[in-house]
Amino acid sequence: MKKPLFFALFTVAMLVLPCLVSAQTSQTDQSSTNDLSAAIAKAEEARKKASDFESPSYFPGEWEAAEAQYANAGSVKTPAAYNATADAFNAVFKLTIPLYAQAREDEIMALRNNLVAAGVRVSFPEVFALADKTALSALGQYEIQDYYKARDFAAQAFLMYQTMLSAHDAWLAQWEIKERGFERYDSDNFNRAGEILNDAVAAYKAGNYSLSQENANEALIRFNLVLSVGWAAYAELRFSLAEAERQAALEIKANIAARDLFTEADSSYKTSVIAYDSQKYEEAAKRFIDSEALFAAASASAAEKRDNAAAAIKKAHEIIQKSDETARQAETIMKGRSK
Image (cartoon, rainbow, N blue to C red):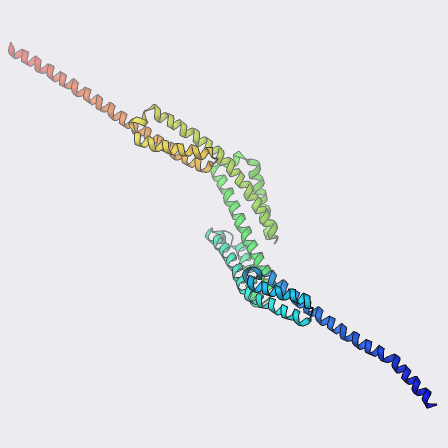
């Protein structure tokens, strides 16, 4: 009776034991798979972070070595290999982050200093203070080692300063157009640019800095087009005035009577024409103004010399007449004595 029971138990054990062994093997395999997946994710995250903060640019040799470890880990596919790869990328990142942060700070400070020098901080204190606050937020995030937030705040601060610079340049162009009266040469672009510049200000106040910069840049482009048209028209006007003054100088013979001044004026005039023909209208206009003034000076000098010469001739005639009168009087006296 006992023997059949023994064989029954043995049979059951033989059936159950492989299942237990298989379950344990599956658990071990799953644990290994999980460990490998975690190590891969760790390496990928470290690699991405180092890449995001430009480690390949700052430390190319160390980056290439870490990349070689990464490729090797992909071949052997063990948690240890991937963990070592993660450590390698993290080491490169630690070398990179101070340099990356300093480079961003230098960019921001250079742009900020340009704005301060241009008087933007004084003219627009509230707007400037908002950008400064954002820059300080970037510094604060860096100090607590939240590097991605620090990067985002730094990028936003840089964009805000850039937008202010574009808007300020557009405002200066608008002011110059008004001062010179150039708006009449291209009123459509001038009016539209003014509207877009107002849109840029509204977008900035709403926190949409990308749109604000886009609008500010478009306004600046349109204002510059107005300036180009205006300078071309103004250069043409100054060209005609300088040419008229040159002809007047020639008519009065200033090229002879005031040779040095006329030569200087003519040299400036020819340089102006070259600039005009090269479509350098602003330069040409300013040079034509100088030429015109020099031709006028040459004419004045020639006129003065002519007047002086005329006065001298008149005086000479007066002296001659006086001498003739004196001679006649003397002759009369002599004739009277001879009688």
